[in-house]
Image 1: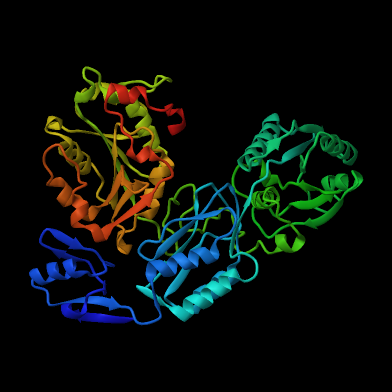
Image 2 (image 1 turned 120 degrees about the horizontal axis):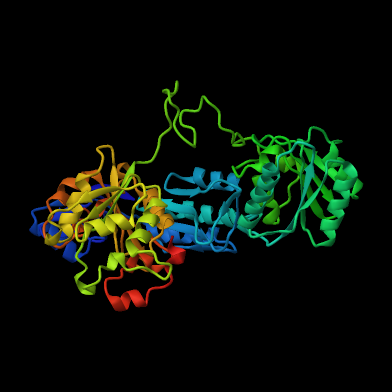
Length: 549
């Protein structure tokens, strides 16, 4: 590939390296220069451009990414189309992602032009969740490099594979000792039920017996007769040895012990056994808590149909420190009250949200569409705000205007800030400016949400927030569905001054054309980001909003 300043007379078919803004037109980075583009450049006074010209054997970025994606495809994986040298891979079904880390490392070591990034190995993934991305760094890949990469990707076991969770039946034995609180017993059942159901399984009616070997063994036998495919023992006292009550009960019930202990904390004191072909586990005490611990890693593999051998357990130490400790710079639950002695880890940009709820609802007059209740009696604006609060955006600012008191009353008790747009009658821009003015100075971006889009969930908003990185050029984030652009949009602080100068009944979307090189699109799984409800007929045809909480 030849790269550098290129005279316009030699630039036909070359790839533009940097965005060029012309009067009334923007030529984006990556544009293949045709005669019309060259004419526009020449008319604007340009005599040369910085461009890339492919040489014989070079494979263009989209074709290279497309071929690499095809080489990595496996059952239960889907992919996006190639664009800007990138293809994303997605899981088709809920399951456990297995990554051949050595193969990924070999592919990434081939040449700097071709990269593959994946989620960590053995993480649970949801249907349609992105599991990997392929990115061509320059505008092309040398043909021989791509051929070797394709060959390596197709050799041996799949580089990426999704193992779907199976709907297993799980039996739970609780052991009792004098003085154990009933709340502790109930907590163990609920925590286990939550884990099992999250993996698409079913928890059978649990057994409660004395903390003795015989009664526990008998309970295991009864659960096997009921069809249990996994057996769990939650002891009133933590297991401390292979010969303790729980493991001894597995042996008495006709099984054996395969491994005791694991290098994961919390979760050290787990005992893995088997009765014929049924896994039988003695749970650590931390399994009574819903927080992530070692038992989650074991159950995820069992439900995905993967073996859990002693070697597998002993390989879980790297990344196995799950326990909160005081010297960490930022504990997961909340920051420490005193400054940390070490440098805090890098975090993502802080994103706030503005909900525009000041409009006069003229198309649904005399009703205020934001206050029209759904079948559960919940006003539309309340549903929208609840969805925003379910995202990671903070703070959440609600802009009011028309029927201010009623809108604020519909949101009473919710942790939001209110901003009143006194000139709301002037249109959408007035509401937008009132919301921006109310944001804290440390907000690095704002998610602008419309009060009449109740189907956009918190998870969808979090996908937009995850894509937001102004330092990497993703300063405007726009949701799409099948190529159609939707809402809400996420804007970096650098655009606030331009947004504050907007007038009339318009938002900030027109700014995208002026900053196309700073915008990224995030494709969504459904059309919620396209659907607003601003007429009575549209509201009547709206799907049940209960699932949009």
